[in-house]
Image (tube, rainbow, N blue to C red; front, side, top):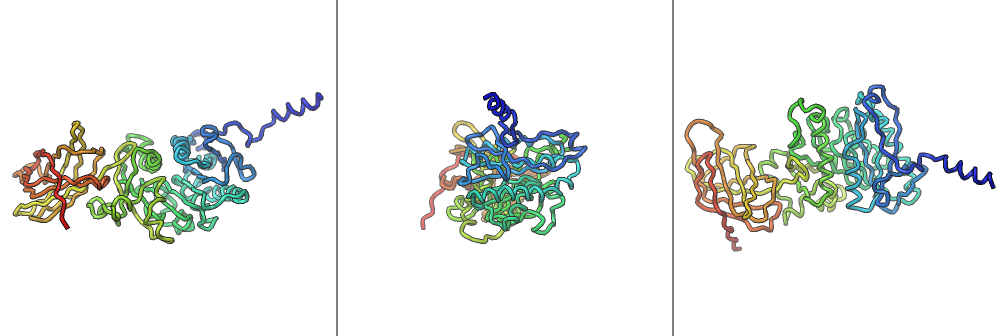
Length: 451
């Protein structure tokens, strides 16, 4: 009997990695980045049963992973300071809040933590091989490749692509959050993420002029604010490290915002950001909003994509606000003028509801050309959505500080919501705008056209 007690006590003391109560993401330091680390991949499993307490899993131990459910892998990127990604747990919890699934955090911090970016990049294929071994075991246990979803951030996006390539493009979906550009721009498809790596590949490009990949990489590529400078991010190096990573990380926070119920970010397929800003691509079908792709988690609901087995690569553009939930509400401002001479300038429009709430849009990215009896349709973007519009104000400007003040004689102005096309269109007739002077008016319902 004493031997039995001794044996039980010994078994309680000996605990393998897979039996660890709560596995945590590897936390390293700048010192580790300087001296370098060897690749060591940990897989952290979260489910609704263990939402805040990760379980260690590997290719020989699947733990609580339910192979009949969807499994989402989160793969981080380059970690030059060794710290865990600040957004990681928010993403885990948000994913589990919208769907009962397995979430596997791919912790390759020992390998991504280095001051030498090329070293981290050189380890991406080895990470992919480890993930393949794990997924192979999932398949043995009855999982389906179609139920596997990979979310890769920066270098992690290309890791997801390499995994997809190892499974001949049969993964269900890959989302690339600002896939890394350095060492990957211009590479052939087999050396980076590409549309053939999964049944559906969607990308959010938020830093194409620095750390992100420039060209399209997926079935649909989303370009917030043109994929360049993001609103709310520092404009100068005086902001320190935040200056370098803010645009790059914005893709993650936009994706996170798509998991909340605050708003769905509608995007507009277009050839260029310029065409989108000029209002040339603000309709996706009939009714218009139903056919427009939604950025983020629900991007795979895009019905135009689902109609085709091999859809063309599509670029979609949209603008965002500076802060979460980042939603911008689009309106068309249709203006018909009756000036004898051509007028060129910008329009600032302000909306006010009955409670006094206001929202403003300055449409000045490109001067509009107003010709007699020609309609000009301007795309206005507002940070706030007003259910009812009680008053509208307009300011016309040619951009000149000195010289005569021009007038813009408006035959009709019409306001129509893109976010809510079911709302009534608002009109006003016979207005005269004096340059740089605000003109306020109460709109009336536009008459319905008889067919």
